Image 1 (cartoon, rainbow, N blue to C red):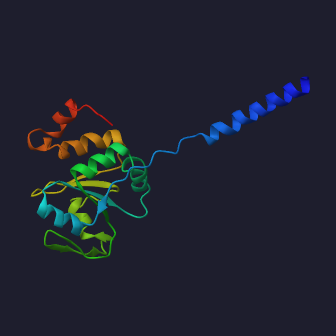
Image 2: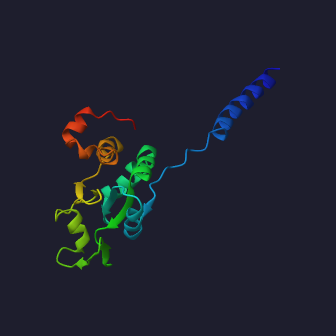
Image 3: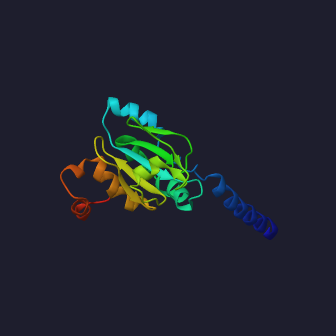
Length: 179
């Protein structure tokens, strides 16, 4: 009798160890930003005016990869950017000719980057750099890695149009995060 009870306890313990792992829900799908090309963004701007958000990166930049992994894959960030912006990734070291708003930009061997990157970042190259271009205005370059909580007020400032009536400092003081 004792052997049967001991055997039952061992079986139940094993079931308790095995089944919880089998019952784990599948991980939630990772949200992602719908990146488009500069040409696509240019064409879409003709149809509907929205700010363009450019992720200016390099292939060797570790913080750029972190921003992709932690910030751009955050559900709130991805959903918001997909709704309010045309989102484009630009490799700052691209050797291809880049055309934007009727002007062509080439690779500059002196700076070892594309002139478009120099234009976007106003000559101050740091990676990653988030660039926001409001239609008809100069690019706004914000250098450095940002976590979603740091990124939220920035993109909402432009995405909600607050830049038209408030300075960023004033907006940020009154900002209430939701991500």
